[in-house]
Amino acid sequence: MMVDIFADLPWWVCFPVALVAYVGISLVWTKLLGGNKMIVGVAGYGKVVAGFFASLILAAGGFGQFVKFRRRKIYEQQTGIDSITKLSWREFETLVGEAYRRKGYEVRETGGGGADGGIDLILQRGSEKTVVQCKQWRVYKVGVKPVRELFGVMTAEQAAHAIFVTSGRYTEEAERFATGKPLELIDRESLLQLMAVAKTGTTSAESKTPTTPVCPRCATPMVRRPARRGDNAGGQFWGCPNFPKCTGIRQLDEQT
Image (cartoon, rainbow, N blue to C red; front, side):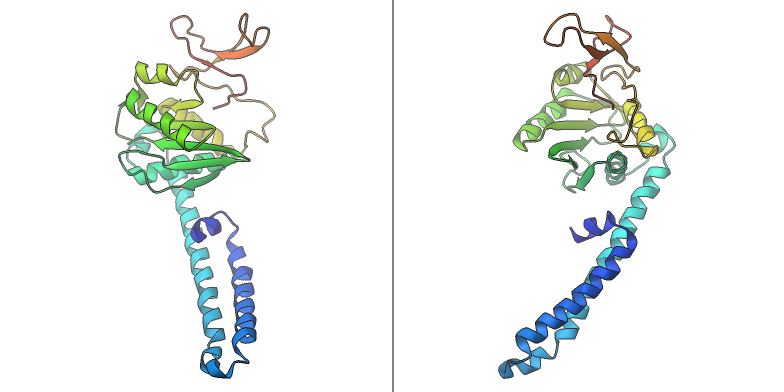
């Protein structure tokens, strides 16, 4: 946990934190134990204990910066789907997490997914929580079962959204299940678009012009269409240009 904190902070922060810890522990230790004759021997170790904790903070800060460097290196080295599929499952999760960090999310890597799936990332933006599963990267088509399971986990975790990420594709049954739910399916084309948007360094909160999302079914860039019926009649939504062959839709505020 300490490593994750320092990985997301500037490299120099660990030095003043370590100094404050050293001085604070030394003073508190001396004040609490220095006047007690029964434990005068222990009282003399105040600076040793303070030095230990300060060293621990510096070590965590150094390792945190190494983790940050590793994330960036994995992200910047990717040239396309071919390079992504050569990553280990852990590197694949790191890649996806870094993409969302660059989009302005706070990202927590759970470390509990493994090569077979599960919740790999938890995204936080304000009070909104999103759970992410990064499917085993060599699976070409993801079926409905793991997508349905992720939706169940999203409900159990009381998350607002869930995102399933794969460098492959999804079956039609999986896409149908996700339609109309707060469940986003990101396939190889959408993953590359996600990385391209993240590399600009512009978060959705900073962006003045919304990017065009891709169809959740066929990955074709979508177009704005007027809503002629339903609760949103008179408004607009993102529609697939291949309609009626493809019926993929997104809400107008969806950018990924």
